[in-house]
Length: 438
Image 1 (cartoon, rainbow, N blue to C red):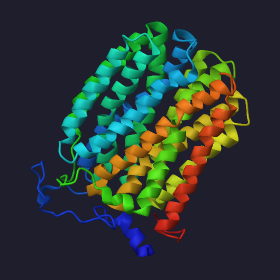
Image 2 (image 1 turned 180 degrees about the vertical axis):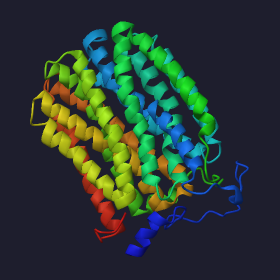
Image 3 (image 1 turned 90 degrees about the vertical axis):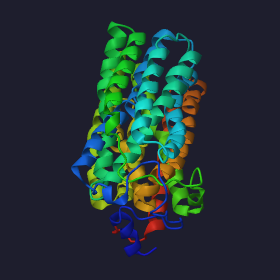
Image 4 (image 1 turned 120 degrees about the horizontal axis):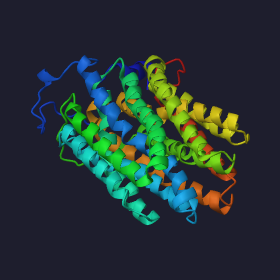
């Protein structure tokens, strides 16, 4: 592909993907909009949509990244005889089911108004947390806090992740960064709030209150979750022709590998702080909050950088920095100060794994097919989440005897290294000119 063609992927906001059939502009849709009524790119209305997406991500991915606080409570207080692998499945299924059901939400969004989908997700996610508060065994929590919440959260996550790129061209990466920053801010304040509620009230009431807040806030903002361009009603349920595109296969692999390393620090750094560094439980919560706090700045900064040097170029930098934070800082050094440095760097850089993948997808395949194609990317996220924490927990139990985290850290770092390598290959497949904005 020539450099001119490569640049057009970034400057033509509604360009159809190469190798895919261009949708007919007169195709029937379920939304009663027409081309003449489509709002302009980079308009103030787009930032209103970003606000609603911001809170959707706060109470979907943001809630999932706070699972480390619950994991501390489960391992040290409620279920001390349960294995780390068994308990980590709860948080893993939260993230995995959010991505898995997101596949179908992406398809549904081409047929059903995203405002209805968001409202439904608000109710289901909130109810899941409330129901989980009545569970007193790991397998019941796996069904409720894990699978049920993942189902509800997928409607918030998928709609929140895919709407913002439709509304922007010049500020597309920034808008996506702001949306994903919602998960970081959510993880930041929810970590402290959940820990405080667990200590002063109970774990059960922490889940009930969080569930009610999710229903109230996300439900109230659902009317703002509006698509900019009308979805094309196609005969096919999903556009499988994209699977033949090598760029898509590389992007799919990047999402799988990146997600495999994404959740590990959020889940296990708090427990590592208590078990390996012999700190009080509050310090584990502080590490989780520091990671989420730095991710807020990182996701916005990565968005700005992506708009200036290209989303894929920025994604390469981010996955590389995430890998370094795990293998160079967390792995060899057993000190609290170095752990904080690793948490800050990982939090700052890792958000791009989630925020920039939709931007790269939109730039490469066009925004009209973004919800459907992101459904396939969600499958990559699902597989990545499933092969992430549970196997890492088994490594901790079997080879680390529950106290030595070396194997677990290497396991997560290798995935991030592989994601970096795949992103570089994708970059070269699009353009070999290293100075091109991609």
